[in-house]
Image (cartoon, rainbow, N blue to C red; front, side, top):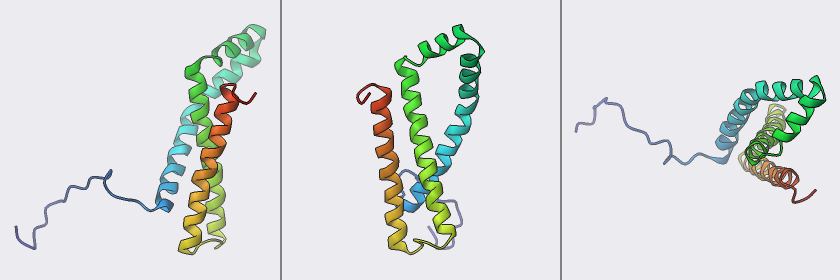
Length: 130
């Protein structure tokens, strides 16, 4: 193969090691998309629960299923991560914690904080800490 070969190179994105700051950015986008996708279902459940007593009882019954509890925990992670990463990005916009070391620390704080809030929320949802 010659040195001037211009064929495309196959990049395996799963083998590329991203810096923690890039992972926070990617997860921030993923969490935003998950929240937008969950919005119609949440609005439907809110509408149904506010319509009458039977609708409220139906929603309360739905929210006891393990599948919806798991979705609620996933939504809780998306919300926690999106808020914490958004605060981090706002701090970066104000030129705070913009140096590489501080940026890594705040990125890890976002991951650990979102995971901690999600574990706490899962305990509340599944009744471990009620």
